[in-house]
Amino acid sequence: YGGLVILDGNNSKFFNVRAGFPDNFIRVAFETSQGSIWVGTKNAGLIVFEDSLNEWKQISISDGLSSNYIMSIEEDSNENIIVGTISGLNILKDQKVMKKVTVGDGLPSNFMFATLATEKYLWIASNDGLSGYQDGRIINFNTENGMPSNIIYDVLMDENGILWMPSENSILSVSLNDLEQVAEKDEQSVQVRQYDKSYGMKNSNCLGAVLSFTDSKGSFWIPTLDGVVAL
Image 1 (cartoon, rainbow, N blue to C red):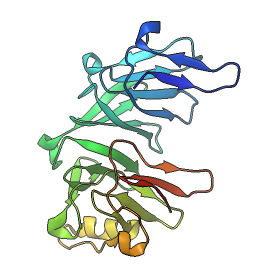
Image 2: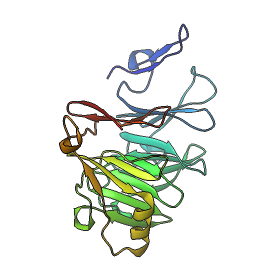
Image 3: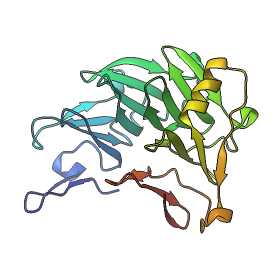
């Protein structure tokens, strides 16, 4: 952890505490549909670059964030910024915290690794399963109702509507349509496929220290304890 590097040929920039940047510990960087860059840190919350790389705005617990330890950043179809932390979910609009969702609202855990916004639900990968959030309603999936593992490090969706979830001991997949149907009924188990060494993985233990990556061709690159798995 040595700061933030922005690669742009001869115009590349390096940001760290010595140069006045709020934190050297960077977890995630995200570009919004409007072109602003959001950076999630371990100790300083969110850093937002808008019009240039010469100025930034900091958003932290003093501004309403549930934690300064940021785990994930994404944007939904309404241009809300969805921020996962170690102390709950935050929904921001125009750089202001509009809503926080925690165990007090029905989440099984405040510690979340990643989120995925789909048309109907906001899916949350945590250390206690997968949760779907919809207008204040929360449905939780864990080992008691079909999930092979409770520790889900990430949640990604392919072009066929299949969710892929790196977990502590395998990669899980489930149809978004099937998941939504079970969520609506709130009484059935979900059918999840599990991929491990028997499918060719060198090591089936995935990692939560870094997020998975989706390349320009739609392939997923998932970190494991013994290299990266490409799907």
